[in-house]
Amino acid sequence: MFNQNSDTYRFFDKNLKMMFEKPEPWQGTDIGKADACLRTSMSYMAYGDEILKQGVLSCFTKVLDGDKYYYQGARCYPRFGEEDMSRDQTIIALASLKFNNVEELNDIGLHLKYRLSKRFIMTPALWIWIRMLCKGGIYNTLFGLMELLELLPSVLWNKFIRWCLGYDKQYDMEWYVSVDPNTGLWHNWDGKGWVYDEKSDQNNGYKLYNLHVKRLDEHLLVRLFDSTEFPEYAAHLASWMIYFMKDGFLKKILKKIIIWDVEKQNYLLRMLMDVNVEKDVIDNYKPKWTFRWSNRFNGTSYTYNLKDNNALYNVIDKDILDSVKKRM
Image (cartoon, rainbow, N blue to C red; front, side, top):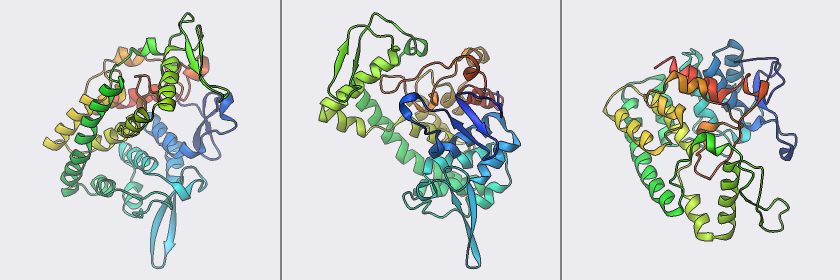
């Protein structure tokens, strides 16, 4: 449920028209401005409110360049993070405009520079995808071919890497966030070396994640292999890009690849690939800290269930499921 006035984990700033997140104690005072465009765009797809649309559009500034113009994207209004506006922020922002049939999409999309910011440039596939969104036609086929050439090798490599490193197991979501105080935890909280506590009240996912970080810290080969993995957030982005393709052979193949790669409990990505998820499964899903659908519950990430009003208002990870489900 979208709430402009809630004092919750995710909260909306009515002046900036941006969705932010309250930091955990160890995160200092950062409310997530660097991801505000993406988070607000996801909120716009989840809720569709006009003020969220205004927030997304405000992240793109029209810049005059002689007798022409272009749009400069930013991570947060007003013009915060223009120097490192990224591909993922751009993809989800444009996806939210397409999802809601916003007429400004074509003007913004077709007037973005190939160099999105000082730090990031488009890939050829992204450039083609934007034209697919705005123009369709041959760009749909071109994007499908380029995505196939990128996605299939990445997923095959993922299968191999996860098998080698032992990260090919899919843990039950409820078990992952539950606590067993009788099991131990590796930690290096003080930075002085890894310590094992025989009993801990941290959840199972956090215990697995810390063991993962310990392995990365102690084994160069594991660290090198892990760094080559096609991450789950990239699968999330790819799923939205494929979602807007016109139906056809290429889209069918790409959907099968994504389904083959993602976890069975990644409900969002599976629905984007036209896999049915029952309404009662969505209704019973418990909102999580961070964005669950761009993480993998195989020991390489951790999260926990939100509680009370934090689990009621601005729960994008749950409400985006309802929004996509309604369009299936």
